[in-house]
Image (cartoon, rainbow, N blue to C red):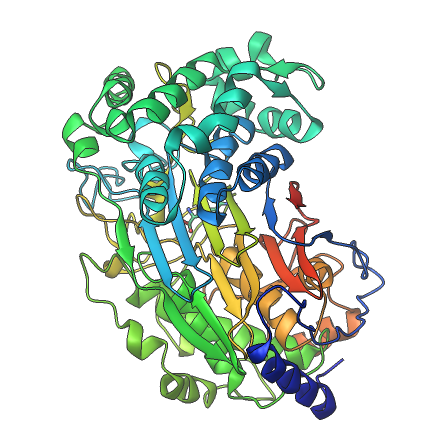
Length: 584
Ligand code: DON
């Protein structure tokens, strides 16, 4: 399974030949993929087939949304036009995470080599303060997770509009047409949507979304058509008037009215003051490949870069599935997450040592603390203690167009259906992103993340995220992989393991995404693995190394990916999740 020197040479030769190949005329040869075996107990088969298309590919958590993007590509739109179309379509078809009431991140790489990173993360309202989620005894309450106080000021509409304005070729009305149609004319409720609404009916039932999503106390039946006239009206307003109407017009009024009704603190001033931030994508290298990934206010790019830099110090990684491999991986994640949890925050508020954390020299120092024969307790690397558990939704989509422009976007309202608050006058759910701040530095949030002062709450500050939209170029600087995930901190471990599976373990996209994964986030100090994903021998060996193992019946992140293959593009949706990859 490991990359032999012959294969490595072949990769380099192929890469060199790619440099001279005219783009997309003769499909460039892609290095051969290696067949992989997974443990007998693992629930997903190796050798699954990804969707293939010759020119362009879109993968997202909802087939209808991917088709919306493909419709825009067929009309001549580029990858950014299509990504914005997917983003708005998800609002209608994937209400658990697709959103107007949340925010996210986008990494763009244009075919001419230009790159951009767009931060459209929510901001804390002006009336927010660092102790707003503590009770009289100083204990953390659940107000950052559920209800009117849990929301940051949404960035999604400003983000989509900004991306389109700078890099798109079409108007908002054009790219929003499929979303508008899906909201207005409706779409057929499938078993995924039904189960998702049903799973969160307690939360949804508390707020104004109940009448639409739980008529008579149950979700709309499978096979019925879900129409969302209020959302359709909102989308039509945005398509016609632009983001202004969301931040200063009629929709802003509806948000503020909803906040007043329930004691929320988002005001007209908050909405009018929301701004996206264009940032420089983090550009790093890993074994000759280039990664373009998201800088703070997301921790995703720094943590992935730091992890891969540590792993790169080992000339060859142990074979996939071996305890020695997972030991290296967990040790690298553990060290990177310690930095993530204590040193990262919104760069517009705190100083963040991105250059140091992503440097090869720093990675060498961290790697030198990894002992081959034993795990390192997190307590010997840091003194912060965890409390609390975790829950789960977020949605990632990847788009590549026929010119080779690529967009990786991850967007969220945090947990499923966000805070539960539904803006009755405008037809969408609000986020509960305030929980991504350290409500009390040193105490765990809903993902069990123990974070520090850098991520304390302040007005207009963006809460630290784990979202990791990432674009990988091959050694000849050709677009190879467009990837990202959902799953809170497991976004980082999920996304990076797919990249490692492609680069180090030579897996196909489908195998790279189906393979069992592990997770380590420093605190709690345990190595999580997916049930059935580690052989009994690997588990025993990891315990002997000193790891506390925790088997996770759910998934460790759910990844969405698009990858170049000979003759075109593959798209694949994590088998742990649902969605669709379509292309042309
Ligand atoms: O920004 C973050 O890191 C979180 N709000 C993401 C939440 C998430 O992925 C939930 N999904 N499973």
